[in-house]
Length: 298
Figure 1 (tube, rainbow, N blue to C red):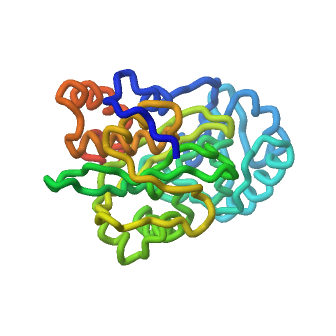
Figure 2: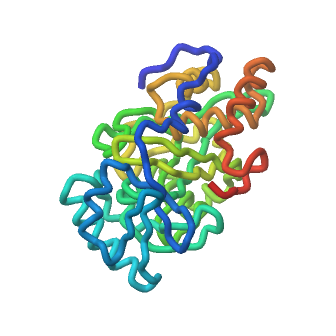
């Protein structure tokens, strides 16, 4: 793995601006009178084929189906949109379509389709760190994504990171992903400590990424070697915290992982006082619930 030049990141950090980059005009997507996402204006004509299910007005796209009809309709509609090339990177993974305010599940949809509709998804990420002689974090395990991954192939990532499918909590997904991505069994992952909840809302090639990342920290012992099990990680390397900070300040790390890494450095007080203050002020916009990390309405 190519090591970044060790340095303390200098504002602005690209991941912070990228986390809320909006490049496409969008129209609110409404279910049960609640704005739950948004649709690219360029894609509105494709929705005209479902006049019984959708109301498309200048103010919003509204789904007007009862809860017991939504999953089947989304399955049919998303398959059709995928055939048209509008739903990209199909995963065959069911994800909840939740209310951003309450978390109530309003439907279950294909994971990739959440980007088309701009609806909220949940992610779980874990910083794997190793202590120095003073007991403070000195190194971070950083993964490199497989070159065959459908999103961000070959980029640097956190030790563990993944989406939260329908039927799992972020904690349950963490225990599963810990084994798949790092070869750490559930009983080992259960020692992870919760961090904060980070939020992104940004245009990406697949659509809109509206996501809340549940962050955890796990201390690994010197000599403890993570090992990928599912082929989604090309390799892992132990970087100093300065090297990890430099990676998070560049373009070689995924935006999600950069935010999670910067959050770790902030929470653990691993930056200079000047850099800490500057980053903390800029970072507030990425906290899903303000400084306490409790999710707030989008």
